[in-house]
Image (tube, helix red, strand yellow):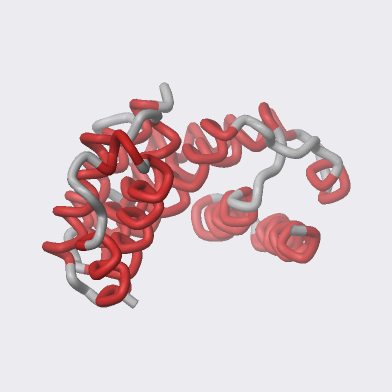
Length: 212
């Protein structure tokens, strides 16, 4: 697929970002994805840089930002994946702490449990759908970086999962909320020794996955 997308890029006329913007953006984005899937990471960086430089809106750049994060993960470079995610999330006014301790992560997790209270799966399923494309993009960026954070800064991974859950609670469910609920269930089991409630959130994630 990368070969054919690259051929399409070669056929674009000079100045195509101005004259054929949608086509040029689409070809660059799809070629970036094909480069990632083919482990052509240098090509991905070149294509992504063009999109970031030329794209008109932040939403037009989101897909290649996500691919950059995933590419760092695929290359076993979790710290770079986390740094790129920080840069991207900052564009959406979503901040992650830079230095965290295990006690801070546990306190944040307990605070979230207190905030949720006795909500059950039905309450979460009845949340409205998230419609803000910027928040949905931030959710996807958070989901893409969780395991990189777990590998390079485990305490930060807790805050990544909690931020996903917070966005869902405040702005509604998105497809990526499935990841938020599943990871929260894992944290409840592993950090708060509450496997029953953790299992319930795992079931909630499956219910939401089927609904989407």
